[in-house]
Image (cartoon, rainbow, N blue to C red):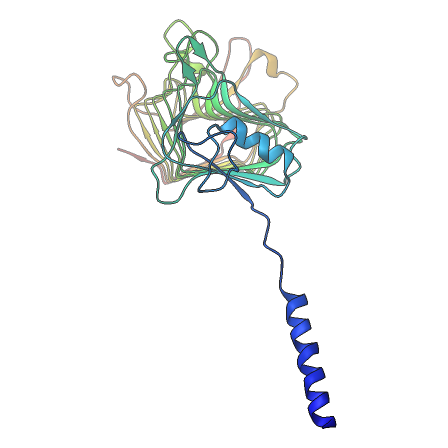
Amino acid sequence: MRKLAVAGLMAVISTASLVTATPASAAPTSVYVSTTGSNAASGTKSQPVRTIGEALKRVRNNTNLTTVRIFGGTYRPGASFSLGKAYKQKSITFTRVGGSTAPVIKGTNGASHLDYFLKVAADGPRVHMKRLIIQYYRTGGVLLKNDRNTFTGTQFSFIGNAYAGTGDGYAGIHMNAGSSYNTVDNVSFLYLKNVANECPGCMHGVYIAEQSHHNTVKDSTFQGITGDPVRLRRGSSDNLVDHNQFRRSGTNAMVSYWVHASDGSFPCGARNAVTNNTYGTMSDETKPGIIVTSGAVKGMTSCPAAIPTETGNTKA
């Protein structure tokens, strides 16, 4: 009898331990967006919200949410989005929902033209962008002032004042204010253009500006860009441009380091490398392609030593 009592007690203790060890349901880490959703919905895959703006509102108010998953369709945000210290996550991922087509995000809606899709402050979370299509923004796709962002399988197309109203057009991805250690991998930059009388040479695919270091641009496609597809400026150093394809792009070269009158206090960049790329003609197709150059506005001195490594590049 005593043995049976002890066995029974052990069974109760064991069962209690199992009950205690059972974890509670994990909090969701993703908010879903669909053109057929509702901003009053829960934001789950089966009950998505309708707008990217609402999704970011949920992310800002809930630190467990780290991923915005977007169903296929066309989205026209009413405003540019800014990520700063109000977002407490270390990083936020923007990606399409698996199995759906890539969502198309457009910056024009009738007479309304937005500057950037996304602006990330120096104190904002890292951004990881995957398999999206960003189109018809005037100034650029994404403006970065922080570090360690990644872009994979995304397309930036039809950006600039040729498509989205009068004003400055700069880049698909614009790294500024020391934005460093970013990776651009397998990204398409297609038809980024400024019109002839509004600085066509100011538009780039990737603009690495103002002491932005250790960035990598690789395995990407640049086509139909009026300015130089990759532009470095203001002391930016140790950047790698590798295994990309350049087609019908560039005012001066496919990759350039440029000095402007306002750059006097910045040193020349150093140790930038352009390797194993394939390139065709310039934006003006009557001009043969040039892979690398350094230049300066009148009265300033260029920095040819900013890009000392230029190897393995092939003219198509």
